[in-house]
Image (cartoon, rainbow, N blue to C red; front, side):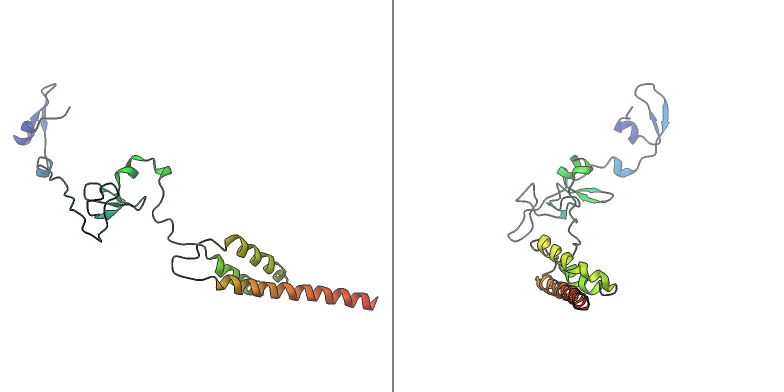
Amino acid sequence: MPLSKWELLRGHDASCPSCGAENDVRLFPAALARAAAPQAETALEGEAACFDHPAKRAVAVCRHCGRFVCGLCAIELGDGVSCPTCLVKPRSKQPQANSAEARMLYDTWTLTIPFALLIFWPLTVLSAPAALALTVMKWKQPLSLVRRNRWRFVAGLGLSLAQGGLWLWLGWYLVAKARAGA
């Protein structure tokens, strides 16, 4: 049963309102102080504004969805600041704000595959199909968080096709040599 404030203000002893039992209470002074409501300042032109209150200046970013929040909406938890919307949503359905911190660099893989397979040279026969597949499937996907262009796709595809051409030539040569010897 909660104790009334006047009981708590008397000192260390407080009586339970339902049973009358005496309780030894030690209370932090801040528990009885009036909490000041968080103030949200008006956003000036060019400043980030709160997602829910467009006229209020943003003071934090929600760690779950990445929305800007004002002082009224910012809910500080042990793991960072959350917005009211994310606080209500179940954790499994929350998008992650930092989900794009790293991307697979398929253009670099397309360029690396022909060279990496040179270590095991018989596997270079796989580099042309692998580079072609990566180029076709990932050409329109965002490359990186930093500005890049697609020259790695083109260079990797060229190297892989050259390797594939050399394998075709080797196959043709061996077949022609076998026919000439027979």
